[in-house]
Image (cartoon, rainbow, N blue to C red):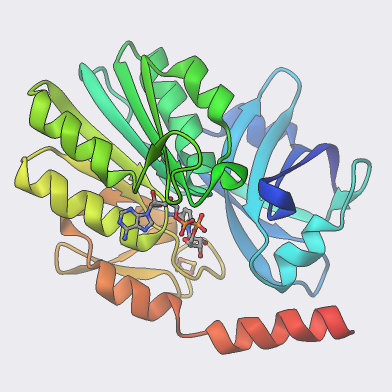
Amino acid sequence: MHQIIRKKEMAKGTIVQFDVRAPQIAKKAKPGQFVIVRLTETGERIPLTIADLDSFEGYITLIFQVVGKTTAIMRTLNEGDAIKDLVGPLGKPADIQKLGTVIMVGGGTGVAILYHIAKAFKAAGNTVISIIGARDKDLLILEDEMRTISDELVITTDDGGYGQLGFVTEPLQRYLDERYDIKEVYAIGPIPMMKFVCKLTKKYNVPTMVSLNPVMIDGTGMCGGCRVNVGNETKFCCVDGPDFNGHEVDFDELTKRNSMYLKEEKDALLFSIRG
Ligand code: NAD
Ligand code: FES
């Protein structure tokens, strides 16, 4: 059992942060890796990226968006409650190197995954330019944390109520037009965002990494549920990823696969609400 030692609600309660006691995982995990969470003996297994950790205090930070039955139940847990199983760290760590100037692009909940990676790029001696976006100010997360580890931070909102009006791709295009020293772009957010970031960076020939979130079941390469098409090869996101060269990812196939179980997920959520 893993005790929740802190809980914070963000983005109008649609995104929740837990600091969860997990000393063994906190000791080993690297930026980009994830855990599989199971709330009860018979519960669904959901992958959540480790958003941060404190190996000294022995906890990991998980940030999740309330999107289905399991995350709706998770949201009702409080400090002192426990999560039955946490398996991890899983997946390959992000490839963090000293490259020079890098741009970190995060959209919506994706900023939670991006933060740990951006922090590591900064610690490795890179100049970190971050662009984070959300639909509106209330849905923007981790602004202060991203500011602390970024040399420059640009904020966008779709409604223009805070930061610059528009999508994250607009300031990204400006940077790519104005600067010739961008060594890599890391983009994490909804699939359309990552797809359009990659289209853009491909034109400028700037290497781009993305973090994918297909359906996952076992998280260990056994079930094939998380297969994605990268460079015309089938990869298993849980063991070969979750981070991949964005210029090689078939985002349209990922979108199709991710929508395969939408009806079942909606039904499960409705059933859990109605009892
Ligand atoms: P959202 O739809 O609110 O978008 C967040 C930001 O992404 C927008 O403000 C915009 O700046 C950018 N964006 C969105 N569509 C874009 C486009 N077509 N072109 C350029 N930029 C675009 O995001 P959300 O509500 O946080 O997430 C939506 C879905 O994505 C959810 O289902 C979530 O599970 C999934 N998601 C996946 C990951 C991941 O692991 N890669 C991360 C975050 C969210
Ligand atoms: Fe089963 Fe990746 S989740 S193979």
